[in-house]
Image (cartoon, rainbow, N blue to C red; front, side, top):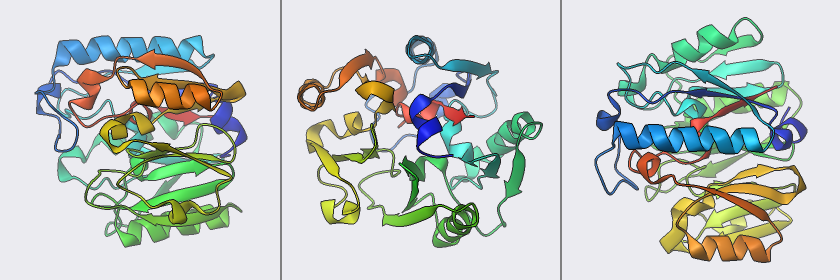
Length: 264
């Protein structure tokens, strides 16, 4: 379920970097052409950081015909022992979801989305026992409503968050590092969209990328390296910090959460 198991992060699925990574989609954060060898190094450091925090990491083989295949978060959304297989919002990514479905179907009940629905898992944030669902250029209203109904059927609440064109996904500028808390990058989403949160931690717009963090129990977080203001802010909020060089992943508009799908 969201909440407890999401904080524990005991198991995660990841996928290796595609040899065609240089052709990955990029339009938001990328400063350089995505580089396969550099991305492999960042991915290895990322896996090591997860394992150091107690996560059992499953590394699936890369799909060399899919440049963005390492971003497994987008392919599906876990709801207890069920998994919604995403119709991802960009046509070049079609097929990635089938590969993750093949792995998950032996242990989870599979929910397939209707064809007219689109959603990326990057538009979903687990906030305690509530699902925050972004409506964006990759997630349409039909897709958000479909997931909302699945969430409601499982006994959870959900909130829709409208995502401006200034950012790709909800997770790109928002994360929940501990119960009751939301991290927000300034200049994208409004604080009043998160009135349900006990604590809103604001990250300066110049470091928007660093608002995507992985939160573990006991106020431990993994953040992207190279964002000193964010590091200082989170230290002041009492977090224990591990950093990972995400620059080669950032070049393909990927963030920390994009690289993993946490499962029970």
